[in-house]
Length: 393
Image (cartoon, rainbow, N blue to C red; front, side, top):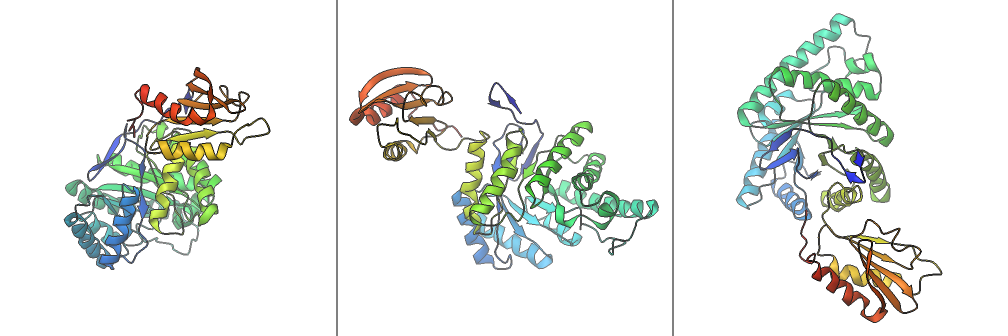
């Protein structure tokens, strides 16, 4: 949601995950998931450290059973010995007992409503109203038991609904639809309300970007109607690798971020987890959700451009990339100058052959500077205005 071109984020409560806070006025958090065997302690620790060095603020581990929970406890202990305090998340499917134990070990547990309890009709036959309610009661009982443990250990929960793993009960009633995903989540949120438990983050994921976007927007609408204000985790599951995975993630996550929706994100790539992190920060930057580096605005150049714009951009980047929160425009001529770069903090605009004009926002502060002096004068302009030490995060 926008007002006068300003990014406005959907209000949510804060959820504490160890030393990290998600939601509220905190930055949109970046996370990833390890792809090591969780029982490989050394390999898992090494990969986690690489992800954290790349900028991951939360790391999730596959936790199939009790053995993996115990290994995760060892991973956490080794990380803490190495002064790495990144919160860890246990990713649970099909194993309620593992979820209960994991809640005593790590800072957050992700559960999937579609497989948290065993279906009473796994073949997907039609559910009677009584059978639907019977399974719903079983789910509530087990989930309440789980929340009780989470309360005791100050463990946060992610209710992670996947389009590809809705329960037979939900599929039978709602079909393979965004509504089925939303209702699968809402029935657990209502249990959370009953149990006075609010340390919950929600995700609705699909490999189909349009379905994922529609499901999250529908969830937000229905949560607002029930006065739920939980933070949302965004991601396109199974996005792929390379350019395909990056584009799908940018569309799925970015579309919701510009609506003001999203409090933590993961870019799911079929690559090493640390590769996901710069893509995530790039999406946040492009959506103006979280500024972590200098942003460069530049025109594609045309016949009116009378200097080598690619060389100039490279030089300016080399001199200013350590800054944070600034937008610097490099424009080839006056046609694409002040108007197109109106959102920039500083501008470098071609004014004629061998000549450049410098701008601070929309104001031209120096005209017709010799091109050979222009980059140095731009740097001095930034310094003179007190923005050289800009470290906004």
